[in-house]
Image 1: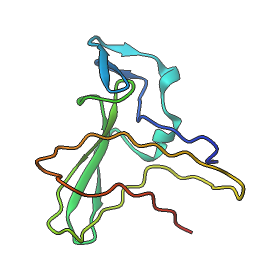
Image 2: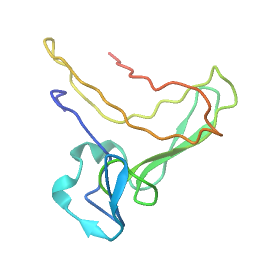
Image 3: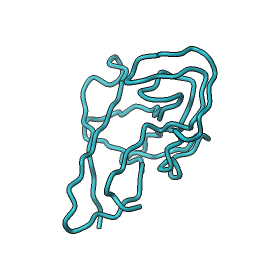
Image 4: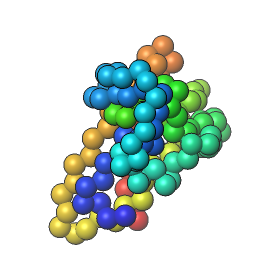
Length: 127
């Protein structure tokens, strides 16, 4: 996928309630498949697993069962690190970066502070 304007809220286009900018604005079932994020092709609604460098298991899936930022679904990641030097990679999107492109990357996330007190969100570019 070309990276001119890559954006996703992990929105399946349906859900049990609707959120806009992190605030619930409807608590009834809805569907509008024009809101479906095409970039969800790499992330499934069935649980997947990623293993950290030190062997810890992290599960991830797109779900309608938790609060969202926009729409009726979001990406849920579960797992825990046992060492500060550990990390895990979860592939979200394939892109092609052009030579003269300028890209705006935004991430909205909510973490359980008791379980994840500090850390980082990284953008990793690979050749």
